[in-house]
Length: 371
Image (cartoon, rainbow, N blue to C red):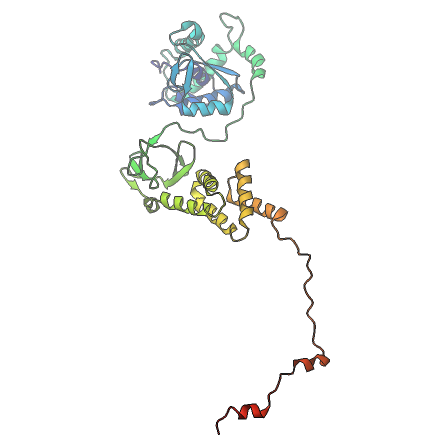
């Protein structure tokens, strides 16, 4: 703890200023990650009772992937978190003590006044000591420059913070896993298969999250590719036999075949391809629903439905079916004919004389028979 040098002053102040007993365990992780820094933000916001409009940062690899003349490329997980929490970012310039001298002094104050030569039994003991130090020293003694206790000023400033509510969604991981040419992904000393055709040159990377003992593999757009039960053993290859089949060509042929039923196959194929991108796991079921519509409605109804769905961004077979039914109700039903159906007359008794068959004379048959 004595040799601890924080990467970010903002995160450090959030950790030290929290009442969460587990927070100081985040001070010196073995492998610092963006997720740990985000968790420190959440615990700091919870302690402060709100979220500030702007946070000042030192330039750190946990937050910034690259920087070019003031243009910062944020780490994916941190970028998503900032978008979720809606606060502004201010990054100090490198090697600029004037812009970050205040927070450096805060870190030095915590190290020299609280941590230096302090012995402790475990992290919980250190946290309890930190809370006591905050209450009797750091927050209640007058500040050296303002001559005011920070705790009193805090009650004035906290009303300007945005309300804090715990996040309901899990913070996404920014770690990407490479898909190997044989369509497997290595995760924690085990190999897990992905559907045939997932790997494409030059490379494909996916994200993996754990949920209730299951590994959920998604592409970089957040769409789920597959899931496996997490292996409790090391060095195993977890396979799904269904992943061996290459369904890509079959589905492509199926969508091309379905598009031929429309007057404009190219337009229909574009619709099916977008439907495939959005509902990849259920594209066969989606195509089957639209195929059945060709047996219920005429082509011009389905063409109008296709135009409506493309214009309004409707990409669902169920919604496609509803639009087709609506258009059919409006102008697709055959109109009633004004021609009168001829009346069928019933024969009367007096009309039977006209139905008597004609008869021949016997002499006509005798002339045909030999003597």
